[in-house]
Length: 203
Image (cartoon, rainbow, N blue to C red; front, side, top):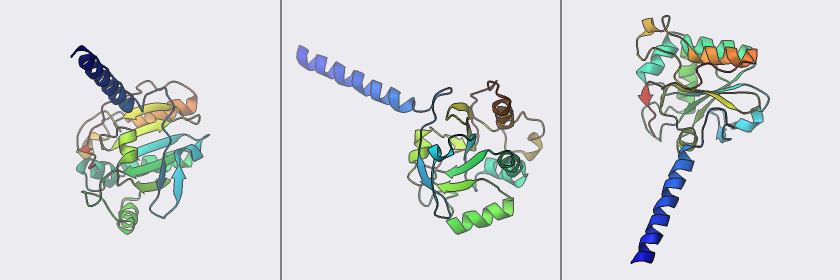
């Protein structure tokens, strides 16, 4: 029995180590995991293609009330426009599974984006959820900021007020704006990790 118990203990330890390592794929101050996705126009993108550029990853779902708050108000579209005008690459990702809430076709995404005035560098449908799980994306929105050398420096909420109310936007501290300003100035991001809020990602 003893050899069997030792084997079981070893197997359990290996399982714990595997789970721990799988959840440690994304960490502030560490290289952001590379990935490949095809955008709604059919163009293939690799995160590593943008080495040398600051990158924002934004998890989104057009039907989520929290996303609607930030898009309908112009908050995220304006942030996208300001960031991309400053040379930032903005990648919007929907990790909803096939047929899930907000899993729009490319044509629907294009129509919605035009209506909202959205201006990301690219929009992706991550229907198998691989990239979402790689980054442990939890909510829509959930945002990440990656520096030009590929280091993850921000992971969390768009701002400091966890609500779906448009009127709260003006009162909130925008963590993404602050992170991008710090990166541009060559300074550490003061609040590098926050708790994201919104709708759960529809894996």
